[in-house]
Image (cartoon, rainbow, N blue to C red; front, side, top):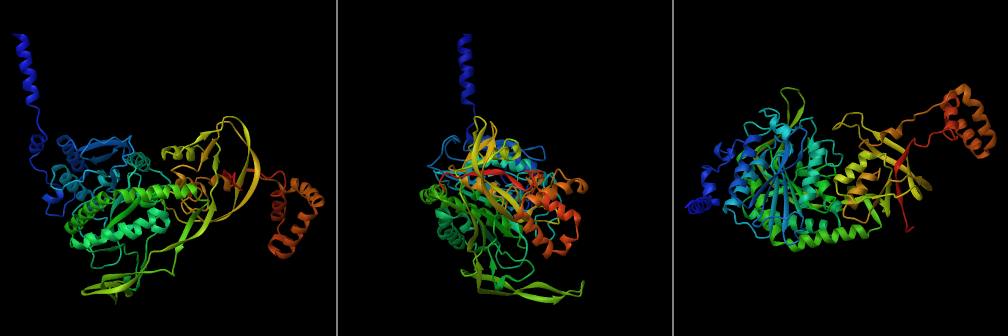
Length: 584
């Protein structure tokens, strides 16, 4: 009798397990705060997380994960949708993988609300999802900024009523931090990015600047910098196809209007997204990425719905063109690994220009009643459409020969740790060894006078090169360039690259001498050097004759000799990352 009762209890329990539809019905209202607020409200951080927790509980097609931490002390949340269970350990070559980043600037909240509605529509079937889709989104990237809610810091923005702040919990602008990774947010993003390994990447933003007719603009990663097959596919197919599909839906879109203080009607250039930016970082793994930049002066409702439309069309294009996108990425990896040279800096090519049929407003220069000076305004009663030059082609201005290996002494642990976070393959030197390497010497650089994102970055870095044998210690790190992370390795370790670790102040200790000399003691040594090296004496006398300031400074002359003596410290200005070339 007891056995029968127990069996009945088990059967009753099983039969009472709620279905997905029943569980979804328990959530009485799937409307987001944006929808409830008549299109002028954005969800708070807690509302976002609660919404996704309920969605993941109600639908097996939705997964929610906590990954890493942020500077706020709270984790990042990755929300993923797929019709089938996702095996992240698989390469998923039969799936188009899309990663969306939201709330990097939480005052630009359009993507947060649009993605909530999009994932709900995918889960409930309101939007038919392709079978070959893995759609992932970071719910709120800048958690600290989202918690710092206000209604004033987006000075010119037309809604929503309240929103988060641009700076994160440590006041970093996170869209300047992807390569240097000062924040926990960036370090956790690395985990997410390499887990998903997206084919397509979207970062949702709101623009500042000029006024024009468009609600939507896009900022595709610069196609020449992306390069090779991926860059070609992005420029010739993805961008143009997306523009056309949005136009067909009644959402005309134009490239990000990259002007400040001038009217765009006379032309403008594409924004160059260096690796400090999200799409510049994802480019290093040949992901086809772009930012959505809605126009700050347009109604919040229109901006959010436009953002949702772009993401929906990206899903459709990705699904339809899965093979072409995968092939383009694969070909780019192969091309970079077979290349002998790598372009590290780019400038606008003024000889190549595209033409936009640009929809703007007449620019008016009125006298300001406040300042008494001319001020640029726009007259919305005078719209226009005209052909406008758009400079979106860039050419390489500098390149390096790709080595077979880089060598990083184990003392540079900060750099080594960032390499590990980015899944860079490394080898450990098994014993003390002498290697024939290329060493850089820092000959010149400029340093910013103003703080920028926690740094005083360098620029215009000039190096000289010297090939020499050097002794390395057991457990120093060898990094082969023949690997998927080749672009990340070069962009960070080549000091002349725009966003190199050198330019971000990782190696500033080599710029300062640690030892010095006393003039009255060193003078006798200098005299011996002068007597024993006729070539140096000739160079010294020439400088002395040509430079009065040098000739009249005892210290300058003695320092000149000291810097050429055996007493001069080897570390000063010698870049502590080395290159090994086998095919010279």
